[in-house]
Length: 252
Image 1 (cartoon, one colour):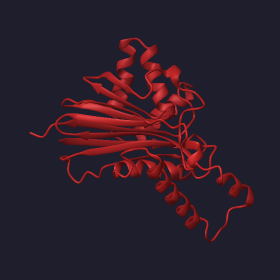
Image 2 (cartoon, helix red, strand yellow):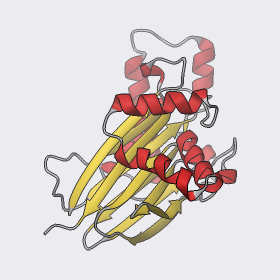
Image 3 (tube, rainbow, N blue to C red):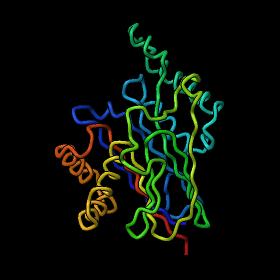
């Protein structure tokens, strides 16, 4: 199985790079030929403490196969890692009392993860509004877990570091087949909502050039330029944005 993977990200306008609270990860590619491939994007909830760290832990755990099932025991272990890393970061500079108080509420994050394997099989798991799109010959043949731009809201399901916050958590899964040169796009919510809205609203002739931008991006500066324009035109919310693009084909 041959894989090509590209990652692009940008913090919310007005924020520094170290304030970026999305996360992404994928199987290291020493060569384009791999027996299996995993990737994920996650979006830490801005209003919670150390949510970017939580998003990083979730994305990395999925890719490292430590989060195959989003179950209470696995989440509890990752939550312990989150608390331990915070303790290390704040050892020499304790948090003020109000930050400590906020920390007790935990962190929250969305997650969508993709698993690719031969022969031509894929599976995905999702919690919240980070999305995956499968494109074949330029056509979206699967959108997951949200399929319409109107489904995005201010209260998505999220994975919490606190067990109480996960009581109603129900991860969703999907599986399918891939063909040579299929493209998978993983996006956090602001970019995913924009992508779906444009597909719904634009004619085919106007949609195709926009779709091709996502399929043909070659550099981080090109991605930055695109996002800046979308924000300026007020068609994409000012939020952290992340895109992971994966192309797959069978080994010859």
